Length: 192
Image (cartoon, rainbow, N blue to C red):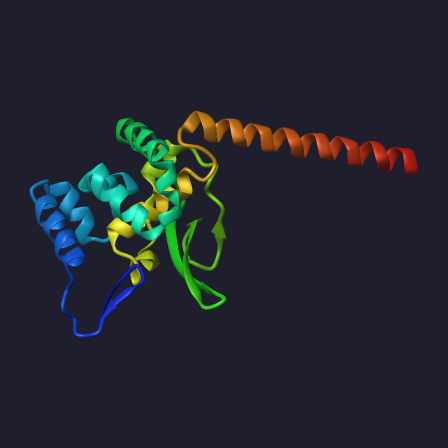
């Protein structure tokens, strides 16, 4: 049985999508180091982004998340920025888990240190670190590399379509939390 995204092939016959992914890996073979990483199933996210074009990523993104088509320009800008980034090592591994809620499947995107049991939210993480994250092998249970890249792109841009926008959102969140803590402390002082 072959599974990718939400599609399962019961007869083990690959679909056109599977054939395209296989073709990409054969092309990646020309780049020895990248292909070794793919064979070892321990590539960095940046390696995966390198083997797919923007068009392939966006087409698949809009298949998986059709409501995101309205933000196509934002995703194009994000991919343009992502393509220029140098990765920095990251202790977390990218984990894409298939979950089910009310009969519908969705992908949960998080960071994990060693196992899938302990995960962390990563939507505010620096994009250089995203590019340096290795893929948790558990992600490959239900997703191929194209789908992993698409889900990562969706999560990276959850708070904005550039690192600057994401950093601003994070700063605003921290400011709100600090303000709330200050107000709580003042209330506590006044009640004592």
